[in-house]
Amino acid sequence: AILESRDAKPGKSVPDTQKPQVPPYVLPRDAVRQRVEVAEHDAPIAKAEAQKELQQVADAITDAEKQYTEMERKVAQGEQEYSSARIEAEQCTLAEAQIKALKGQMKAGERRNQMLLQEVEKEVALVGEKEKAAVETRNECRALQQQIAEWERRLEKRYNSHIPMEDVVALRRTCMR
Image (cartoon, rainbow, N blue to C red; front, side):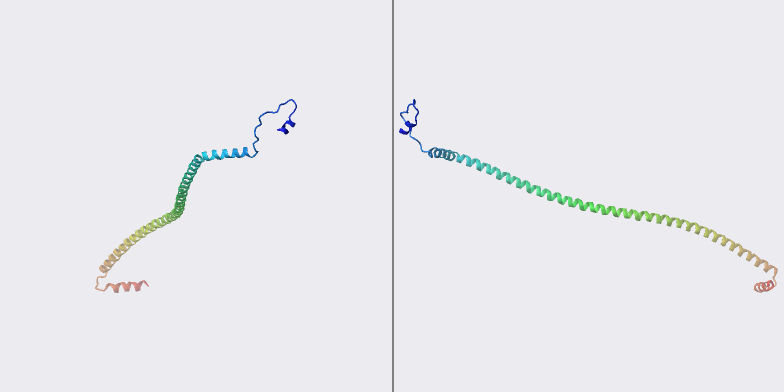
């Protein structure tokens, strides 16, 4: 108090009651104590909230893992469907190539068939001509056979002297030479 009075300015009075001075570390310590008390008082609530949030996070992780597993399954199924579709597309491409080759063979076969049909028609026409020629030749042969038979009858009538016909024919041949 004496020191304070020295520092005091003239005209001011020195207070009669002085407050006891609090050491400088007490105020921060009290503030920390108060915060600790508040934290201890609020700790079970905060802990429950933290556990609740932790459970929500765990549930979200579980849901995310389930979704991830489901997506992996869907991706695997999609890949399998894609593979099946690709194989089917390859088979279709091969089938189309075979169809194209078979159509080409069919066209070549049709052309060959047309050529063979034309040849058959020509052969049929040729056979018809040959048959007509054969019929005509047969008719001519019959006519000639009839002429020969008639000439032989005439010869027989002319030379009815009991000379064999062969001898007469041989004699005629000799005369013609």
